[in-house]
Image (cartoon, rainbow, N blue to C red; front, side, top):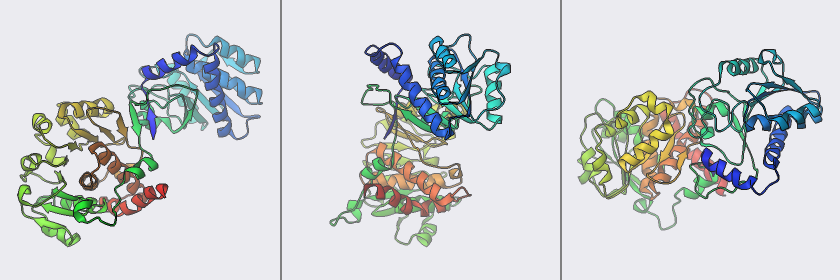
Length: 474
């Protein structure tokens, strides 16, 4: 599992370690890791052109010491100073190694094989200053590989927010621990490939943010045994679709069946469309309370004004609420439920639930998902370029899979059915939501191969995604 910690936690761990080390030793550890990563990207260090963009903080010091190491191996290294001061020890080391210091940013070298962003660190706030932004743009336009030190300058380390111009790195070399802003868009998109350099920090056992990996998902996947029957594997009820949107019901049922449900009970007006695609579905006209035994309910996709939300919320089994089911949702009613509830809004639906603008949710996704989870006493899966899963307590989970091609009609309906089937199989709400998002994103990658993809393609690729994950466990 990939874990991330807030700046204050990392700073405290660094301070505790520095108190036990010789002066400057921690920075040297970071610089050694940064230099090794840069050397690997260059391939041939001798004769390579390297430009360091150096700010006033410790990230600038890391860049200078790393640059000195590269210069001693024969690279031509120039440091462009972009702050009112620079790390004196680092400057001395670079000069001693034969590096060049450029104090006038307008005289920055025009050509480089690799550019190192050491402008601001994890404590930086706001976007790049105009002069720094100009130099960064020139570096990007040159075609050089751009490596960020710890975090791309201009990205908020704790949230991933970008409030002005920010570095768009090819690679980010981060020290000691991942920071939330490296895993959450828009910061994630600007970080490029991530490299973690261990520097010996002792961090708390519970992170602020975590991202599941294949092995984590494999351990959570429900696996039938010899004694399993359809009820033991989990029966999920789907209340979805309408005369106007029958396809939403079909897609939600498809997601549930591909998600391993032992059986699916469909309730709603799209029964004929569902049976035409999936004759194994158990169809009932409703209401949900009379449809039969289920271990979890999914309600909302394509529902329109079809009734059923109050009936489902009044049940004593886990419920996943999506799309139209989220309209007019009462926080008190959700909090009073005797069983868990999972909400799966996109940014617009989350904004309506919070009484704010969509742009506000998009710009502060981490804060928004935590606020929703607390307000509704539910597990919240906030869909988007970075899908986040939050419960009232514990780390927020970031989904690392997916593709922009998932932004297509009906893909959320497939996810609802898939996550609902995992709820019915007995997974805890946070696990069902995060495993569902992981498999959904993985399936989209398999289906798209960097080409347009439809929601039913994603659903059909779920068994392959499931196998990919299971193969890790062997």
